[in-house]
Picture 1: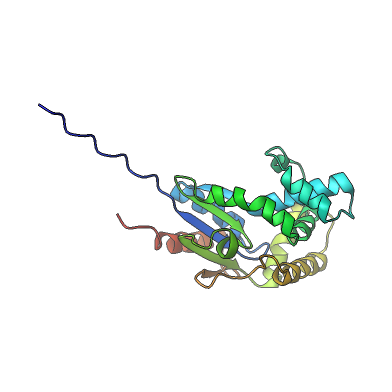
Picture 2: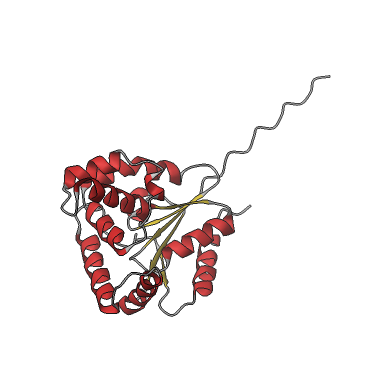
Length: 223
């Protein structure tokens, strides 16, 4: 008697969630919560640019140029992503500078795209995920909040870490960074045309996460 052929293995699930938006809108917190809720892996793409910026700054000083930044991006290692100070204001400023350099973006592009399509599902947050990195992502969210709310959140975060910075300084830094990110020629920060808007201005962390879970769940394939 011939044994029946074994059923083919199920194809690995590939589902990408792309979160974009300005700094301190809550997208990192939401991205981590989504990854945990759905069992996906998470990549904070901003960390790649922070690490690149700080690596270039460490090697060449405050006045690092495009070639310094490009070399830092090409030579980025997992160890660089664990360096101290990557969540500091200085790292955020350095990230915004290197993110405008085409050679840096090109060096980090394949890594992000490969990560996004790994089996099991992935959540990526940044500023150009839904528009450039993963334009075919199954779920796209644009997470935002008004300037004052974002500045208050970032000010609390930085002062909680011991940084001596005023609210007005943080607000000014955020606005300058927003303007630079939105105006750059390469992958400007903007919402994808098919992204779902999530404004967290008046939402608690729990409420924002719950809304994001609802939006992503609505894009999951039905059994």
